[in-house]
Length: 175
Image 1 (cartoon, rainbow, N blue to C red):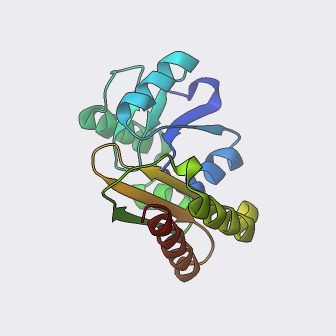
Image 2: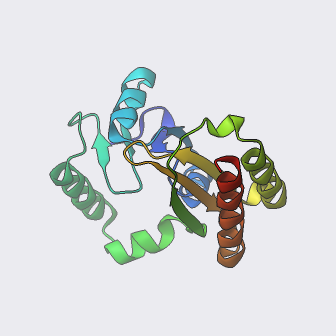
Image 3: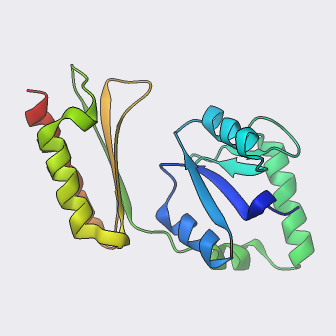
């Protein structure tokens, strides 16, 4: 089957390389909050038929309303049969993963990230340095008292430093 409206739904945590690969193939990626619940909500609300999370939850809305490993396996097998090519070839061509880091830090108190001045300044500085070559996402975990900092960019060591800088700024804001 084809993607409805040539659109894939993925969460904000999905790698930038996926977005670039979808766009290069003539499609588009729509991002939603983390959680397969939000993937399904977006699929239904916008009339799309496929989406998922970086964790591996894949939702084929034409077949099921939840992430289903068996449906995913059948779809993959169907693709292999139709293409006549081995999986190793298809995955090699699929996408170039952008270096990504996710750091988490536990904090006793929780504040709106948009109201944390030092954190916002650090985020802005990183976004300026990365430009269109990367992304920054700072959000509170939905299940733990942790601040999550996800950064993507061309250099793994550099983005790790950036993420640590943002967490240090958050620690100052929450001290």
